[in-house]
Image (cartoon, rainbow, N blue to C red; front, side, top):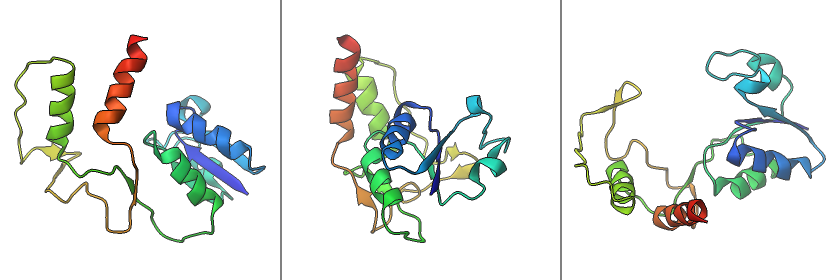
Length: 150
C-alpha cells in the first residue's frame, strides 16, 4: 500500500514516516524540498497517484493516532484529532505570553479574519466524534521550555 505523508520531513511528519516505514508499506514523505508542494500543486499529482492513504501532519501527539488510522480499516470519512481542552486561541496566546514574561497587552478582536473568514466560537472546534489527546497545552508548552533550557 502506498501512503503519502504531507509534511513528511518535518518534526512530526518524519516521526510518522519512520513509524509507518516499519509496516512494510511504501511510504512517501511529501514536502516542498522534495519537489512536492501542496500550495502550488508542484509534484502533487504524481505523489498521490495510486496512494491508498494521504495524510497531512500538524501536531505532536497525533502521530500515534495517525498511525492507528492509517494502518486500520478504511473509514471513508474525515477523522478529527484535537487536544483534550476546549479553549479560545486568545487563551493559548495569553498562556504563552505569561509564561515567557511577555508583558505586552493582548488585544482580542472577535471580528478578526482567519484566512479571509470571520470565525465564531465553534469554527475551530472538533466535532463530537473527534479523537481527543491527553496532553494539555500547558503541559506540552512546559516541556518545550524545559527542552530548550537543557
